[in-house]
Amino acid sequence: MPNSEDIRGAPLSAPAELLSGRPARIVVADDDRLARQMLVSILQKAGFQVEAVDDGQEAIELIGRGGVDLALLDIVMPRLTGLEACRLLKSMTAETFLPVVLVTVKADTASRVEGLKIGADDYVCKPFEEEELLARVAAMLRIKRLHDHIAAQRAYLEQLSIHDEMTGLYNYRYLFTRLNEEFKRAERYHEPFACVLVDIDRLKAMNDIGGRTLGDAVIRRVADGIRRSVREVDVVARYGGEEFLIVLPSTHFAGSLTVAERIWREASGNPVEFGGASRPCSVSIGVSLYPSRDVRSKDALIRAAESALNQAKREGGNRICVFQQHGQIYTPTGSAEPPPPPPPGKLRRSSDPAFVAAQDDQREPQTRRGTDLPPIPPRKPL
Image 1: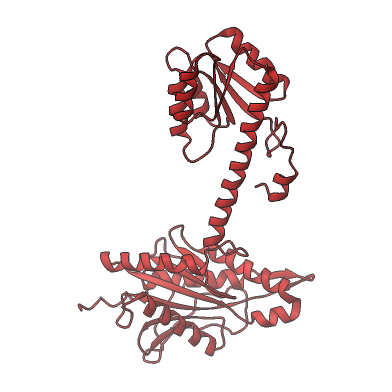
Image 2: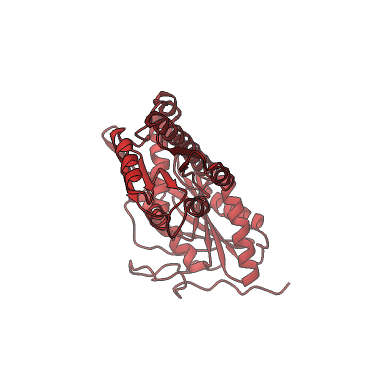
């Protein structure tokens, strides 16, 4: 994407080349063979890439394939006149800018006026003055170049408005828009719904060792691991400095724990290389579920995930806690230090220390609707 320095530094007199470095591509449509050849010769001599056709219909088909920067259309042509072709082109390129220059005779004022009314950007008169023709073409391409630059900047700003610049994940603002939409959908269709809150353990210590450079590298590494661990329909956002929130539509207890464990293993099994040494990292994860007796709103869902994450932190970090009901937080056992990915552990709760959360082998269920874990309690009627 061109920056503002490219625009200010580019020559504005005769832009035979666009900012991409390639010659401008121009389509010439004229049923008069001699006039068509003259236009092609003048434009090619000026450094443009020119393609010539003899009626408006062919011009529409050629431009529809894309990659055209300007159209020169004779007003009087068989099958499709220049005015009709201009009207169609302007409707086809409503979201972009394609300059259309009409070619007419000096005496045909009415056609020039009508063409300008329907959207033509300029016109040239027969017989051609070479300098005038090139000046008008250059002016139209200059306007197109600036229009394309503004459109690219607008698209970039739109991306920045919903994405975190460091990680490329969605940002806090976009997260809550999608969270609200997904929660309403889960309520309406009575579907399970889960949130996973991830926090990087001891990030401040990482910053103390290697400065912000190491801390940022750890954040990006964990973000990449989360991105690899979820589906396309899931929403992954940066929730805070070292926190990430994952929205899991149509996901119940078993599926949410599978995703959480996958993220946990990605973080533990991918140390960050810094200063010639491998820096291990780990994460603490809190999971909340809907429907649940204590979760009846998206705010309650977030609070439950934060409560589970706080519990994981209190128990030393590097573990997963799942909040399901008030006073019941399930915690898979695991070492407080980030080891190589261990075999699946057991899920512990105060009332049932033998509660098993994972399969004994390393295979993951093919879908999130497996039957390996206890199902979520049915939703009680209001």
